Image (cartoon, rainbow, N blue to C red; front, side, top):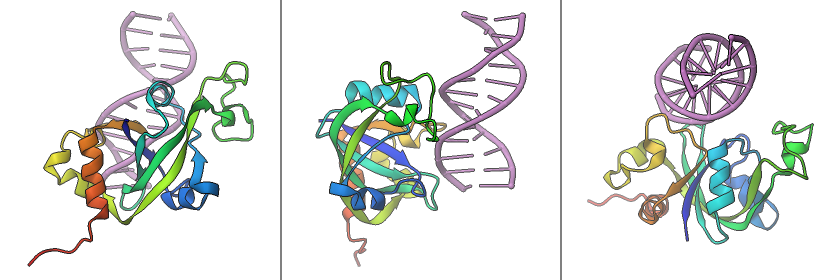
Length: 160
DNA sequence: GCCAACGTTGGC
DNA sequence: GCCAACGTTGGC
């Protein structure tokens, strides 16, 4: 099983939107970056687990978790001329872009802000924290996934 | 709103 | 194949 971080602007599609979708399941359309596409197409498998990251938010951070429930298939928004993701190079006969389906798993009681991720020594190698890293789909190690999960699910109570 | 960093495009 | 110009991402 693999682990991923997937970014979405909450104003476009948030963890709450995924939770409230039919069956808690939605397609991850609109990816228009080749490296991110290749991760979906070549490496994402059903059962893989995902950190759902809210980008361009105040504050940005990890909002919850999801699971891959359908492996890569053509992204039909690419041949919808009305869609903001329209790309005339992609056709049903010859799709350029793919998407996966995600199912909601959990919404953290409190967002784990980017600044908190940066403060954790065990996360210092996370791709997300690298300067200039903009990829919207990033692989995680199992340790990174579980470390963020622990931050997201702790009660926030401090000792003493 | 600013702007650094990155990806893409297209002329040559 | 190079690289300048442009568009996008996304934190701040």
